[in-house]
Amino acid sequence: MNRYFLVTLCASLVAIWLVSCQGTRTGGKNTKILLPTEWKDIEGEYINAHGGGILTYEGKYYWFGEHRPAQGFATEVGVNCYSSENLCDWKYEGVALSVSDEEGNEIEKGCIMERPKVIYNAKTKKFVMWFHLELKGRGYEAARAGVAISDTPTGPYRLLRSGRVNPGICPENMSEEECSAKLDTAEYREWWTPEWTEAVKRGLFVHRDLEGGQMSRDMTLYVDDDGKAYHIYSSEENLTLQIAELTDDYLRHSGRYIRIFPAGHNEAPAIFKYKGTYWLICSGCTGWAPNEARLFSSPSIWGPWEQHPTPFVGEGADKTFGAQSTYVLSLPDEQFIFMADIWKPESLMYSGYLWLPIQFDKNGMPVISKEK
Ligand code: GAL
Image (cartoon, rainbow, N blue to C red; front, side, top):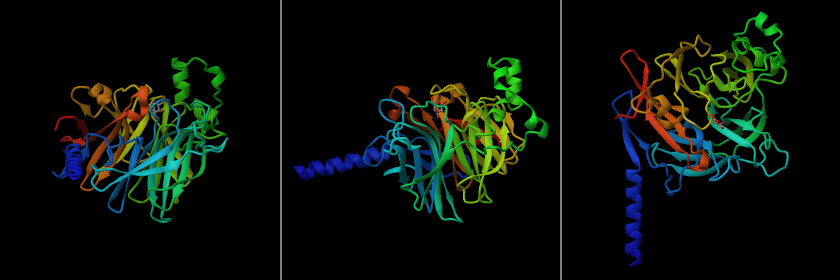
């Protein structure tokens, strides 16, 4: 009887795994990729890896994301890691970067860790994680980037440091005149007036934060074909995106950076390269509420960046199907998976996920649709 029960249970579990994966065709070769639809790991637990990204290493995928509590907001656990060989069956690998129990520690339990991304450095053979960090009890004012390191993909990762970006350094695409101009936030107290917008474009917040370093909130990482890595983040009070080159060991900023779309209010950057063009998908800034995604392209990471209409098509496209971008996974044969979060602010842990293939129209423009 017990044996019969066990066999039936195992068979139904296998059936659940099988139905929780769904085939999808991507824009590249006509191959079928299975993507999860149930968002449970192979133990049947809800996957808790929000605002995340994927590291591909030695034929395996490692999904890193925010562990979020069922109730509440702040980080109580850290950054979670799951692994998979097929993008569909995910094994929980545990907490890759843990919060600290030490009072006053930068990543003390109760801080906010968001949008972790991990890249592998082939020269140093280290796995490097960058994430958005807010200090405990200080809301979103710290706007820091944290960096952590590990010898193995799943961790545990060790925090090296956290801070603002490139203190004392002006962005490359601001002229000397703009850099030395005296812009004072006290003179532009009223937000969204034409004068204020103009001042933001001229670098109002770059100036304010020059000494201590630029703000860094929603973020992603990108490793280019030549091994150079970049940190792309919402800066200047979430008004302007910045792209900063990392040092060769990926552990610091090199000092080279640009700002793009000043006062454009872009968040949740996700980047990929297709046929030599860099594509960036972002959201607008409406907190947990979905909005219409934005699309940008450039022939070089350093610009010139150009804006296009949203790549989303079909019903719900004007709200990105209820989701907010977090990462684009680049697969062999020019296949790309757009990854996003469907936030549930009433219980962030159970926020959903949306993964869709990116297709390309006859002009080579990305198109993201729910239609098969
Ligand atoms: C969103 C952002 C998330 C998180 C959230 C907090 O706009 O994309 O990463 O910071 O706000 O309200």
